[in-house]
Amino acid sequence: MASKLFPVSRATRALRRFPLPTPYRSFSAAPQRSSDVLMIHRNKPTNNPSIPFKFSDQNLKLVDEILKRYPPQYKKGAVMPLLDLGQRQHGFTSISVMNEVATFYTMYNRDPVGKYFLQICTTTPCQLGGCGSDAIVKAINEHLGITPGHTTKDGLFTYIEVECLGACVNAPMVQINDDYYEDLTPESIKTLLTALKEAATTTGTKVPAPGPLTGRDTCENSAGLTNLIEPVWNPETMMRKDNALDEQPQQ
Ligand code: FES
Image (tube, rainbow, N blue to C red; front, side):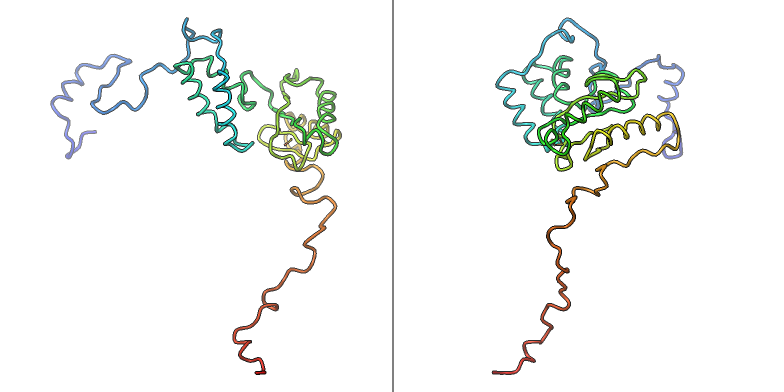
């Protein structure tokens, strides 16, 4: 904008007489802030999903190493080093590299999913804990009428089986969108699914709060306190007062 400090120069006035064609690229002596490469994928003979890509055996060992650095709930953080590894092996991050990396993660949906995306954990602790995840999978199959990897006809529910989600202490459990529901039983998962379905169609429907569905707050012992049950040690009464030693009778 022209001002006393920055008057419109003669050159600018001259340029205004010749409107720039659209679209146009400005030029600058400063370094480019973003890549000049077109960021839309278009299939090419050298870059299309039918070109196979698999990590080499040696790189698969590195993949394991990289994944070990991330706690279970943050494995998705490994996506950048894995893309880098794929790029180093293939030469560039092709669509096949991206697809291969995305298959490591259940959190990247490569197809549309329902309004509620259920990820039921079927790893050993969830298989053995409580009623066991087999019973939960069976209850979901019965209730929704679909098997893992499918979406209900009304588009509300998609469900898949996943590996440990890091809540083994409250097994069996399911992640629904971003929430964990734990301490599941066949009855509680069916009640939950019914409530979610109602909530999708009727405003004001109450859905159980995420967390353990047995009434526990977190992962406290369901049998109640079994240790640390003595009164809390009170430093006020138990600690020696200042100068208490001076007041003791001399022997
Ligand atoms: S085994 Fe299911 S949450 Fe860990």
